[in-house]
Image (cartoon, rainbow, N blue to C red; front, side, top):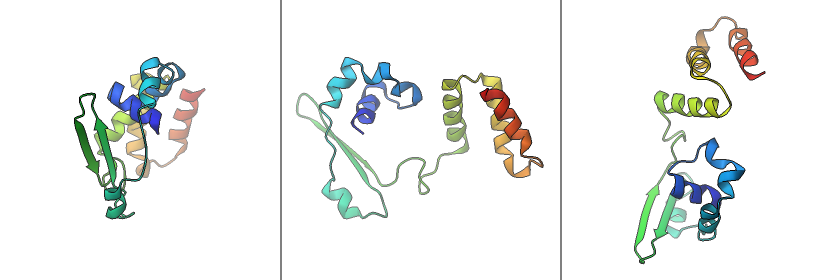
Length: 132
């Protein structure tokens, strides 16, 4: 978790491309990892397990504390991603995996209508062809 927080603070995102050995082993990431502490915040514990409250506090070099919280993380059942966010996340993962935009869009088009595809082989054939 320390790596994730350090990378989020430095890169402002945490996709697959941020979790390569090259990024994780960078001196700036390693230095920030040493400054990250994880623990159970009393306010989060008091909120109860049904909320899964996350509290983040960052102390800046000048002593200023920046604090934020969320009861449910993005993508949880209580705070689901929109279709556009899902498509964007899939697109990022597909690009990282080597698919081009056309391949990615074709797969997304099939995935969005998965409930109406008569033969799921249409999707699996597309995946097999793209992944080999």
